Each structure stands twice: as structure tokens, then as C-alpha cells.
Image (cartoon, rainbow, N blue to C red; front, top):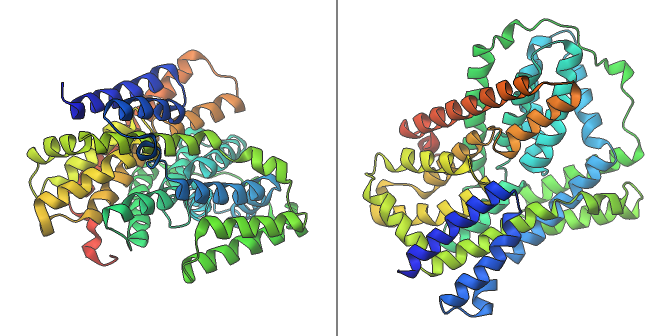
Length: 421
């Protein structure tokens, strides 16, 4: 059997094992990459070259800094103050959950950290306000996913690192904007479908009752603002600058360094870089070309974007967006462009891939939906029947969200007229 075919079968097996056994695909992928690469005649140096050390350092720096912001209460207090500003206009709470979560996700923490923080916060707030807790938490998670593709966040950093070796750059704002628009479109649909505009309740958060930012939190906010200015305005390296900001906060005694280090999602980072290593081996053995040839044989210039969008959504139901979908499909997007030329845009393709993959990630089979279900179970006693109902509801909403994004892809929305690249 051809090595390209074998490599793809190995990838399917790894994803299946991770899905069934619930093991970290990163560690598994590193071991499998070594075996597969060795069988394919690759040296250990060639195999390990697929582990993106630059991206790993960047992600550690960003998550380390925002671990401090979470550990010293800055993010939580900031969220409460924003919600308190709404006052009696509680009809704005659902939309506020989306934008606040998107903002926190965009400035650095990413969809996982912001999703956990804001989904839990939204769940308990909804319980106190006696409004639909699942939908309120869903707004928060949709926001966390929608904002995570900023140049400062994990997904944006990953997109940059995956695309530059393929010869593409300068699309950061476009990717962020399309992912944000995608999430907002579905948020509006849910807002209307579930009658969230009818919400009338007392806001339990009063600005006068919420404490002021303390010294440590103020310094943390200043550090984040400075990082945003230098990294976006002056193109400084995000990860390395995050280490500088974190070091200053440690020296000023603004956060517990040990707690922040423990808060770094090491498993997630190894997941991303480990699977990336395996994908690189599969690419060297011809597996990516095989998939791209199969997909392009089904495509035309007009159907390329929606087909890639649908593929990413389906993959995201059984795997991670940042760990599997993006590393696997970005190289394929470049191959699609090679085949169709100027008729298909790489930036439009990866925008559709990223947004649709995150659209699927509200499924209970993904981290996003799982966070919502676990937050609900933690906040009140639940029966198996109730949990099964929530499971079905979230999965169907995930399917609907993927469908909406495929439609947006077919309508050319992810190109945005080519204005931002």
C-alpha cells in the first residue's frame, strides 16, 4: 500500500483513538509521527522539525500572562463591571455576553480560557436572573469562539505560523473579522429564535457593590494594554512581549507566579504542536496532496469555499480546531489555490475553514459544548434525562451553525470583497 494512503489511515486511527479513549492527541501524535516518519525514511531531525517551537514559545508566553490576569481576579472583576453597566437594560445581557467574551478572547486568552471564564460567569448570572442558562452561556461561548482569531490570540497566532511557510501573510485582521462576523450572525439567529429580546429581569450586579480594581489588577490591565499597543501597532512579537509583561508583573508582586505557571494549558499546547508534527510527516509522505487531489476533484472555483467549510465543520465534530482541523486543512487550502489559481483566494478559504470549524465547536462533543454542560451541572442538580436533552439541543445547534457558515461561504461572505488582504 502506498505510504501516502497509509499516512492518512494512521491519522484517522489517531483521531479515532483520541476520540474514543479521551487521550491527549499531542503526545500520541508525537510517538506515531516518529514511527510513521521512520518507516517513511525520514530522519529524527526531519520528523522533529515539524514541532513548531516558535509557536510553542508564543503560546506559552500569552497563556502565562493571561493566567496571571485570571489568577489575580482582573478578568473576572472586569467582566462584572461591564455587566453592571447595563443596569436595568437586561435585554442587552445576551448580546453583552457575546461581545464581552469575544473581547476577552481576542486580547489574548483565546477561546478555551475565555470560554471557561465567561461561560461559567454567564451560567451563574442567568441562574440569578432566572433566564435561560444554556442559551445565555451559549452566547458567551459563541463570543469566545468568535473573538479568538485575533492576531494576539492562540488561533490567530496558529494561523500565522501555519500560513507563512506556505507563502501567505498579512491576513490577520481579515481572519479575525470573518470569524467575528460568523459568530455574530449565529448569535443574532439564536437571539431571535429563543426570544432573548423579551428578557426582563433584575440585574443582580450593581456597579456600586462591585469593588474597585486593586493595585495588582490595575498594573495587570496596564501591562495588557501596553502589550496590545506594541504588538498590534509596532508589530512586536506577541509571545516574547507577553513574557516581558509577565516578568514585570512578577517583579511588582502583582500575581502568583506558581499559580500562573500551573494555569498554562500545557496539554493543549502539546496537543497543537504534537498533531502539527504528525501532520508535517503526513505531508512529507504525500498524504496532504492525496486529500487535496480528492477534494479538488469534487470542486469548481465556485464550490471550493463551501466544500472546504463543510469539511472543516465535519472534522471539528470529532477533533480540535486548533489541534487538527487547521493544521490539516490549511496546506490543503494552499493546494486548492495552486489548482484553481486566481479564481480562489487562500485567505477566503482559511477564513471559511476557521470560522466553520469554530461554528461546530459548540457541540457537546467539543470543548465548547462540554464546558456549557459541565457549568450547568455544577450550578444545579440535573437528571440524566435533562443532560441528554441539553446534549441533543447543543448538537443540533452546532449542526445549524455549520449549515449557516456553509451558506455564508457559498455567498462569498468570507471574502469580504477582498478589502482586508
